[in-house]
Length: 275
Image (tube, rainbow, N blue to C red; front, side, top):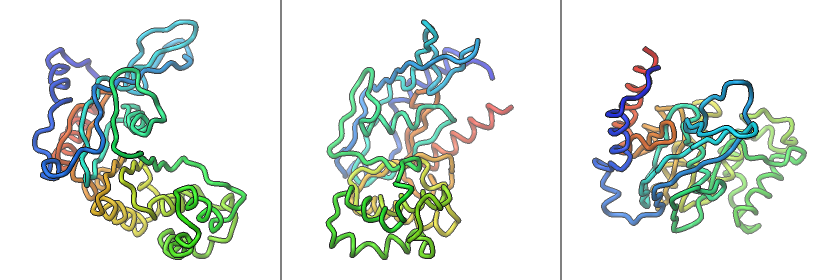
């Protein structure tokens, strides 16, 4: 893989702030998330004699066995109400770091992030309580989302049906496969309307029927005035679900625009990297 020329790097920096060609929703709806020149740096222990680039590609120094990673490099964009935004990029490009920064879980080193309500992160790695049944986890998870007992009773059957786990809902979650647990968490988290929802790889579980239902749920949240960020390596899910895409590569926002256009550009890039 050859290093980028200065011209190519300049092009990337210009594209970072290029928001031309976005869907009309950005003209009519107010902003809900603003990322302004966001940088994230963190230190991690070095392993081995050679240090690999990671999390946005940036080994800056090495002192006492530590390496500093520059995970996000001046990311700027505005997300509007009623948008569904796909977030794509190579492994270790900084996608999840950006999402965690938006939710406040990862602090920014420079720049600022503004949101008009609390962003909610739905990630498949979030833990439920293994020794409790799926049914009990529905109750606890729904309470954590702020639902009342009557609201939980009203939604309970729909949540179970959405998961397709009717025959397993009274079993302890430790007996579930990882996919079953992830489906249950997705169903719980999306049973309420979110103003800002971040979905990190959570659509990559289950069979086609469940994925189709999940994508329908994402569209419903968006149509009801929510804003959704979807991080995924599935270009089909991004194209079918999102009207806009952000392409993060080595910590840089390389492109921002209509989902179909950005996906095509990204796929051309990945093909060229393999040759």
